[in-house]
Length: 251
Image (cartoon, helix red, strand yellow):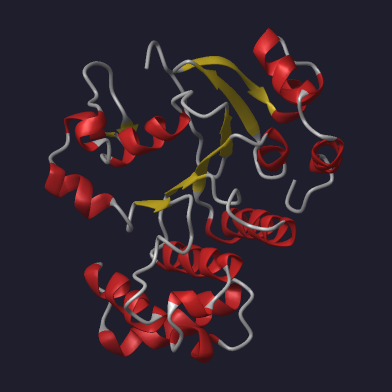
């Protein structure tokens, strides 16, 4: 990553778009302290609520993950333990962050209902493989929202889903922002999907941020040649998503 610089305001959603290998997911992992052996932050700062995460200890980063910074991974089914029922996983998530046992079930029910589940008890009693990909993604979002994070990092949150579920998850992200005020950094290879949720769009290529601007400016008056190529490559159905972005829920 060379010369990458990005600011994110409270309650803002910024989308990063680019081809596979452009470095967009590495940005999320660097913020959350999840680069592992694949890389390290060798220079610069990652400032979250006044604290430099690049200089934070692994214990401090672990404490921030969930309660301060939530991470939604690309594959919603793989994000959940296949051998454990959803209720147990949701319970462990809340317990890890100090929420008393007496409060957990009401919290779980409330946030699953917020994510569109009419029967939270059935979902909590299910194993992940008994739910669809879209349902698993909504479960993960419910777990994230229940901890009231200030920042949500979402790595390709809709790419593994069918078209109907993609639209539903996009609307839920906007609803989370509206109701909880959290900022979001969302990455995708699909500029049409990003356009449905982002206030600003950043375009990455070869580990560089080549363009960033307000959603409508980037979509309808792009400056960088690569951005123009990305938009020109969007299939007709995807272009319909871009046209609908200006009328999205919560815009």
